View: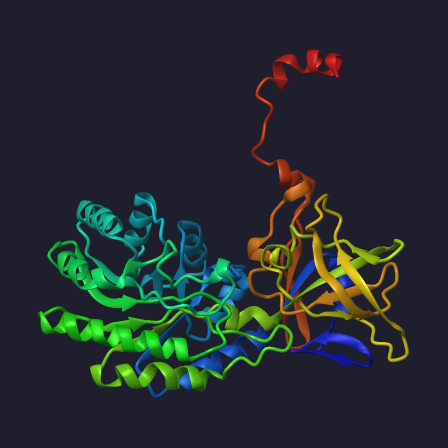
Length: 426
């Protein structure tokens, strides 16, 4: 996906220097081939099972990324009405969509039911009751999977670990059978599966095996009292390599979840996000200046924590590469920081890098997941452009925001009537 060609970093067959020259910086660049490659890897591993793959839209919701996945057969996992709207713009059929999330509103439920969304992951009895009322009002029946909180520690950063009893997600394991049975008695709900998502960046497949064993026990209990369970949804969370991690291949993941459930004849649903797009994206940024202090060197770049918050939020590591490779340049230890007025505005700290000069373009690696989708306008900074590369071609798939975009929809309520007074007082 990303490699040096004639000493210049390229995405597929496109020079990233060419992309930066055309679009400016900061700019996110995604590899369509990289996304397709990861999807096909996972689909091949799951092939022995009855399965469906539902990409987690929150990871990277650019329409071009979603379209790339839709065209090769992916389903989708959404957590908001806005994400549903994106898929509707692409003509994605509702039965390819799973609606997850702990805080669905009645309006969002109604939109999803009208769109024919195939499955709702329900996280509480209160949510089930609300969904039942909304479905009844629409003369619809909502197919649901109950999200199980298995109280299993997945080893991820505490902000992205979702499967322990202390987190807000899911229904406690001991309550699932009772609530599933109660939901089955509501005419506008059709319980048909169980769902469990442990978090993100999971590198140990043993935790998936533990969850599969626990789900199998629940399925057996539910079927023993005459209830239907058609599917087991394992969410996402498959880890990728950012630095020196050794993420397990998808075949190892399948080997963990299949044996405990294989005899039960369920359909396996998975909701990968980072695994499909994380390493398929980089963030291009320009060096604004070098700043030397008595004991530290700062490389100030034009991308900031509003563009890529993961280092500040999670202490996440992202590799950094100069677009021009020079073998003989010296190596130094620097902090790579942005222009935002926060001490937490950094992309790397105490990082050994080839000496970077003013106006040089660098690539922040493994930025395809939770990069742009978590970006903001903090400090009134327009958000970055996005580019998709496919082979030897590339196109801008999201224009860089302008300062006009920043204030669109805003108004000073009395500016029209008292503009002269405001000017005078200032």
